[in-house]
Length: 252
Length: 163
Image (cartoon, rainbow over all chains, first blue to last red; front, side, top):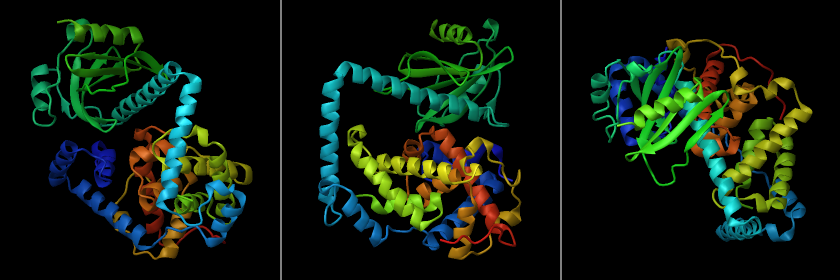
């Protein structure tokens, strides 16, 4: 029924989780796709039925009383109030500061960087898996960098460096738009023997956490920054292959 | 007590019962109170709801059937494709919606309640359920599809649960 390509995008659009570019892109697609239009109408109908039915159930008075008795007095205010929420926050800040002092800043930061990196790696591998679903891999199918590169024009606010490395064993297969961690990224698709390699390209932002290389659920990733872009290559191909692809990108 | 309603509502739908929800919400608040040091500054609601849902799934595991613990990836879809008839959902009252929602697997109930009743963003849902955003997106799509499927069935199936 729904065209496979846009299934997850349809929901992201419906939930207002798309950036302006992605939303405009999707609306453009909607004009030409009655399937998606019908699916969107069905989602709206489901949502209005859910909200109309008033399924939300508030905590009963008995629970409030139980909590008042069971939780130490300090945690229970006579009335639910803003100031209570505020003091939770202050308590939290205090706790964080104490924790940080105990562990030492350096250690904490390393830990933090590691978990951010881990979370980002999960997002990337997830995007890679999503792209492998049927009909999802490329929006523009071409082995010609001069076809793929202009395709991105007007779809994103930067010009990703699109190059074909067929002579080095990484033939360009196509490209598509993707949303990685809430940001629009250009995804370049390369072949490597029988493997598919996704190279995600986004504008570098402060706090971009992925660097170096790693492995997750049997997929390898290599990330680097270059000329204001953040690159992440991900594939089930060997990590040495990804390193080689990185060198091809980095080489002038 | 901030987020008491949010905590109770989530537990009520994951556990499909009001009495259980009261018990588990209380336990979750106690646990949250004891482990306040584990709270990093930021989203207190997401932090609390994560504790609530963990308590709920522990409860289900201890008291319930194994199928409740089925992971997203193992959940089977009712039909590969949807047809126009199934998209045209029958009009439904609260009772029918409640039954359909409760007939969904626990992980689907959880994600729909967080999104549709609690109004959480994808990012918050990912934090609460400790899953990547991509997984949240695809699970939400499947949960909605399955809910719609249950609502288009001519004869409601499944026993009416005693709350």
